[in-house]
Image (cartoon, rainbow, N blue to C red; front, side, top):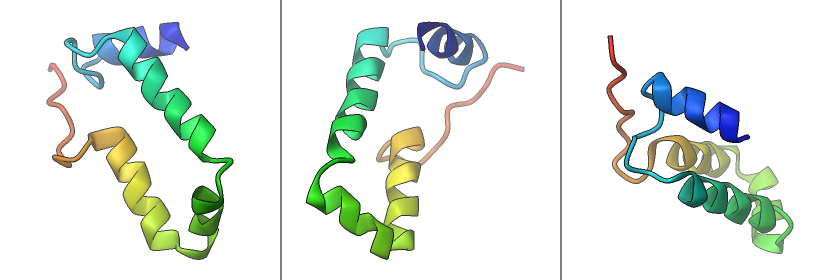
Length: 69
């Protein structure tokens, strides 16, 4: 997982100011949450699930980082 994070950082997909620790904690929060009743109800709402995936990858601002050229 750390190699994937580093590759994403090198390619500009992950902001350099976000630590590996923060990224792993964020991913683990989603992993833990998927076992809750609230998360299981997302199967009924495809749109809500898409929105959460967008939040996961782009954050609340909704803009992907500019990748180096």
